[in-house]
Image 1 (cartoon, one colour):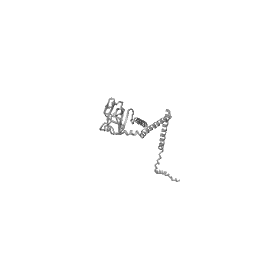
Image 2 (image 1 turned 120 degrees about the vertical axis):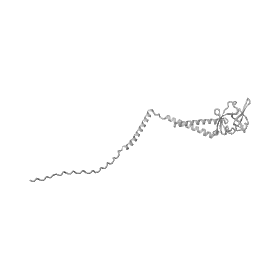
Image 3 (image 1 turned 135 degrees about the vertical axis):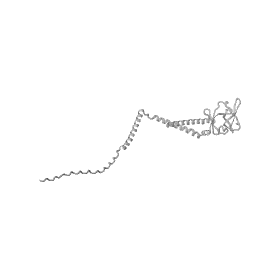
Image 4 (image 1 turned 90 degrees about the vertical axis):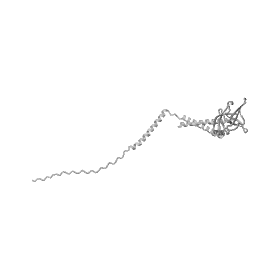
Length: 249
C-alpha cells in the first residue's frame, strides 16, 4: 500500500510539472508573438465572439496548426487570420467560403457560421495564422485567459513548481539517510531473529506458568462424613461359679 501511494504521488508530481512547463511555454511564446501562442506548430486560440456558433462558442479553446503551404487551404476550411475590426488589428477565426487566386497572390473570402454575410475584407495569405484542427475544448479559454495574468501564473505555475522541487528535495534527503544507515549482515539478522523467537517463547512459557499455578492448587479437602455412634458391645456375662457345699465330716 505504501509503495503504491509513493508511485501515485510521483506520477502526479511529474504530470503537474509537465503541465506547468507546457503552460509556461504557451504564455511566454504568446508574449513574444503578438499574443499568439505556438507550441511545436500548434496554436491554441480562445474564442471571443459568437460568430462561429454552433461550431464553437465564446470562451471555448480551439487548437489550430501552422500552415506550411497556403495553397493547401481550400473552401470549407476554418482559419485564424489577422484582420482589421473597428480600426484595430485583431485575430479572427472564420470559415473560407471562396478562394481568390490572382496567380502571384492568394486571398480568402471568409464568413462566420453564425453570420449572414461574408467578411468585408478578404484575408491575404500572409495574414493567415493557422488552420483549425477540429479540436475544441469547451470553456477552457477562460482558463488560458486567467493564466496570462500575473495572479494566474503565480497560482498555477510558480506554486506547483515550488511544491514539486520541495517534494523532490525530500526524496533526495530520504535517500541519503537510507544510504547512511548501517546495513546488517546475514549473521546479525539471524541473531536478531533468534533472540526475538526466544523472547516470544519465554513470554509464552511465563504466561502458561502463571495460568498453571492456579490450576495446580490442591482442592480443599472435603469434610469427612460424620460417623454415627455405634452401639457399645454388650458385656459378656461371666459364667456363674459353682459352689460346693462343704463336706460333712
